[in-house]
Length: 427
Image (cartoon, rainbow, N blue to C red; front, side, top):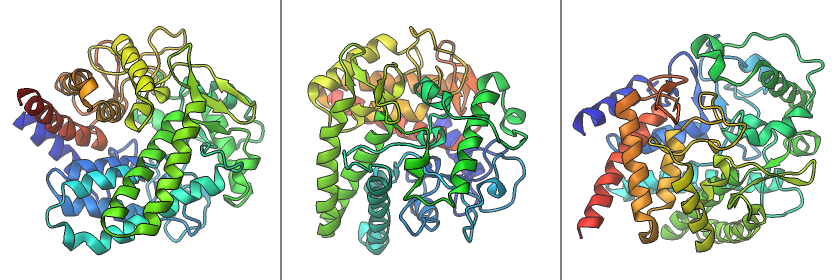
């Protein structure tokens, strides 16, 4: 274990830029929102102060309306497209104009739990709690126009699962006419057959151009986007972060934030059940433009085990995980699906961050054995193929970027988790 731990720490250190980390050099040379938060969990294992700085740096670039962008372009680098000139958000430090899965609250709680002498961080905690809570409020103000308790993503990149099968039908109605010629950079760093297609990329860029033409006004972007998807995985991460922020706020006497979080969480959990599909035995997306559910068995519909869904729902998903999981973990698309692609980004491969979140949600006594299995298979995957961005679920082959920060962070968590599970089993 020590060698693996040392390699994980070295991977994170190699991507450390001082106050923020890059996911990996070359392919992703800037600070990414959820990458950064999840990497902070890893830092907390060996450098707690650096973990706090990672999250604080991200929130230094929060927009005035509360949104936290998905990329912060701290310095010039032409190796990534689309760069700040395409986004044109007119920020003091350039950022993108869309957001990403809101895991900051969830990650902050884990950092706090590993922080010795927590009283020394109290003022910093209060500051971050208010900023993260403001982001949570932004979601319901700008992405839940009918106050349903669920929020929509308006661009596939916001989901973190860029090219999921879940988006295919909605993305197909996004036009490509008028998209300016562009040169992708991702395919120079990774196998093009493993990345989103050129046609998908053109639709991604059409949406960026559309939002830029609306001056990134978050009060109108949802209304004017032809892509409005309520993703159960995204909403789960938001809800769990709301719950964790509420818990932290109550512990330090921030009662207003705690009560508001409690109200948001209860409403959201109730609304999440509207995405349950009895036939697939999991949650599914809802397309607001088409006004229908997206009947597809992706990993997004399994992530809700992370939060407080009904026990019967959790058990159904656990049963499904026994069926779809491979030797190395949980594929991003059901392997029995005709649309499963074992190497292509979010259409089949395994991602350790998702293995981790699902494992975390199954830590209760009823699912102890399954949680332990996910831990062990994830560590086995690293020993087989290193700290890659994602992996072929059949043979465990490394795909995408290498020496990946959040993968290394999750390995540190998995190793720690296996010790906890073994200890619990022994007692």
